[in-house]
Structures are given as C-alpha cells and as structure tokens.
Image (cartoon, rainbow, N blue to C red; front, side, top):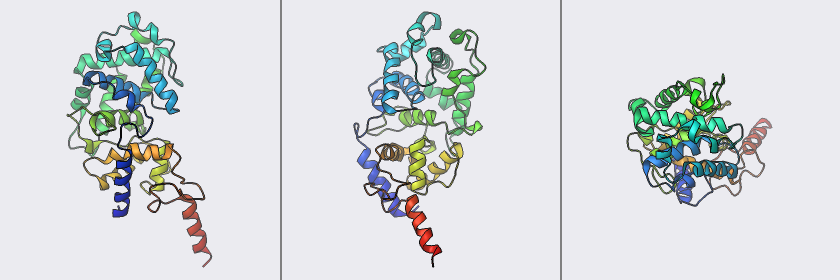
Length: 295
C-alpha cells in the first residue's frame, strides 16, 4: 500500500473520530456505561443495522424502551411468555415481533452458558487465527443450536432470528456481527469498546454497500461478489496501513460514502472527496483506457 494512501486514510480517520461526526447507531450504544448493558444493546443494534440509518436508529430505540434502564438484567431474566408481548408489535424490515423475542431468548441462553457475550466470543477465539472468523462461526453455530420453541412455539424451518447469526462458512460477510465486534473491541471517540479479551488486529471490516464502494474506489479489492472473502481482502489491505487496528478506518470510509462524497461511478471523480488523488474512480479509469486505445 502506498504511503500516500495511508496518509490520506489516517487523515480521513482523524476527521471522523469525533462522537458526533456522523449520525450512526453507535451513538445509542455509547449511552450505556455498564459494560454488561452495552454489549447487549450493541448486539441488538448491530443486528438491526440494515436499511436507512434513521429507520435503524428508530428500531433500536424501540427495543431499548422494552429493555429499560438495565438491559442485561432484563435479558438475564427474560421469559418469552411473560415479557415478550411488548416486542410483538415491533417490525424492522423483515424482522418481526417473534424474531425479537427469539433474539432476546438467544441472548439469555448465551449469558446463562458463558456469563457474558465477551466470554462467549473469547471462549471461541483463536489468538493464532488470522482473523475473528472462527470465533464468529462458533458463536453463531451455538446460537443456532438453541431451542427456540419458548419464543416461536412451532419453530419455522428458517427462523428469522438466524438472520442475526450469519456464518463465514456460508460465504456471508457477517456485516452485523463484525460491526458489533468493532464497537465492543475498539475504543476511540466513536467506538466505545470495553472488551479486553479480543484483539483489534483480528477484526474484519463490516462489509456493506458503502465499504464496497470505497473499497473498490481505493483499489482495496478486485472481487466482484460481496461476501466474507471480499471483507477479508479489504481488511487485509487496511491491515497494511495499521496492523494492530485495521478496522479503525471503517467508520470514516462508510460515512464518506453515506454522505455522498465518494463519486466512484461519476464523471467528476469525486471533486469534494478527501481521498481524491489516491482513488481509482471508475469514470477516470475508463477515460484512461480510452486514451490508451487511441494510441
């Protein structure tokens, strides 16, 4: 990776490393001072992080109102029959009330087994592994093995709660769990952190439309299909900039695109983009090819 790109990425990171630099679900997560509460809210918030950010935050706030002032205590004593009714009316895209009940039931079971979500991931992690993938795989497989009849009654063939438990082995980029892990493992003015059992160097970028766009723009990936391999490839390139904390650039790169500053496919080549000069704008590349073919 060129020194110019690293310098530009570091500058971009610093420009976004402020609590209110962009409207984001992590702002809800940061409100919770107790670590046991923060990890519960973070898992739910990251799991709902798909769709328009305003809708995402509104859905997170709706669940938080049910959880009350002590989310971890609520989950530890959560009984679907007794406590599930306020969740039945909640909807977020294709996630329905019973799926929210199943999610809280799953979290309760994990806490009963491991004591905390941090311990659940730590027990599954391999410090020698190149990334956090094996821990995600084990955590999600365990979550999927839980008896969900108390939440669903008759459990569907493909229960909606499984959407919160994506696995790298299926090719999924596992965007939401990687986002959750970024929030809990990293600590700066954006990510609240708190966990100490996992290493930031093993984190994988939460791959979404915006990271794909900026990743291609910066030449961080040549893959055409989104998935775990693309997320790993982009992370590996970012690790060249910061081996100890490659995912620290994620928030800035994502919101750069969300704010419309990246013009990867446009004719102007992102005139307002702070990464202009180190990107591979699609229109610019096409123009260069056209000039080359006329010689």
